Length: 415
Figure 1: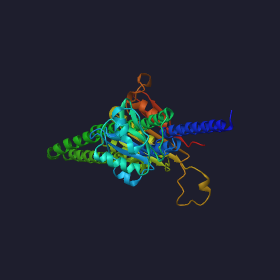
Figure 2: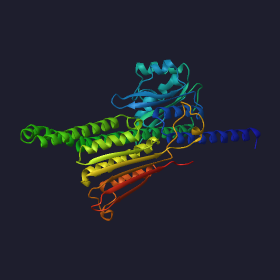
Figure 3: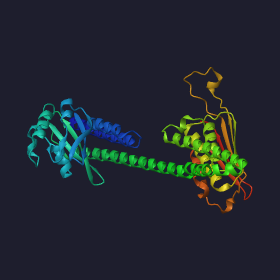
Figure 4: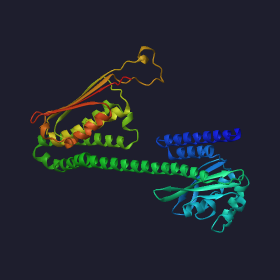
């Protein structure tokens, strides 16, 4: 075999190896949590490198207007980008999207030779701008679940005859781009569903706690004048109940408002969150709710939120099912030790997490027999799932007629 042929084969193998590595890199980016625009920018950059294009653009179809607009590009001039909107069916891009198949243009100045529809003035102007820097163009449709959503365009400064291998490789990049678009759509859909679920949960909390508490307070307020004329001592007890109800409703409203803020719960200490929960539940039940705090819990945000959510579920169970006269919440935190604690702590140093945090919620209510309570009953399944995800040890102890005790323990994870 001639040395020239051997060199050509070696170069082709190297090119294909680079393409394979580039595709693997794109797959890694697709599996990341990067925003769609960042992923598309990555694809346009690598499409240009691996397909040896001088410029790349990803067009997205706007179904309501039948216009194609650039969402990501690399190497195109500012003049072109200012006039880059394409009508469906017009030019190489519009035709590729309209027909659902690649369109290769060897000479942009004579693009009409391969186009099936006459050019309108705007498209003629756009191709004229493009021909100042580029001679060839390949436009490949983006297909997501059999729906054409746009096109991937490759532009070359020199005339180029596109082989079937060139087109097939461009199609593979389009498949990657379509996957990125679909993944972004699914993430957005999942986020919308999560937001809806959270709104529904807050609505239930508002109905089950605050609304009922305020309704009870309004009933007491209505009958107080009549009771006062008949029995001032009983009326005084009614005033005490009214104060307790309004205080509890205010605490629960503060908690709900915190939950409506994106970082609300994360910026409040666990001890304060537990005190608010205690005040809120005390407004719904005729029971003494005491909170005992020892130390300050310094926890990763996800762990603190898990403690909070589990405590919230446990206290809701107390309010709805226990009939308790007394509820105790105890939280004990042991400070963590790290290399930072053995030197002077700088202002920029993050706090050392607690070595361990224990939380106990205990009531003297009706209790239940765990042998006859399913995991989903009383939210126990959700509590266990939250604890497991945050590496919190959870145990629930209860006997009929002897109350219930929920214990949480978080040890710092050593790496």
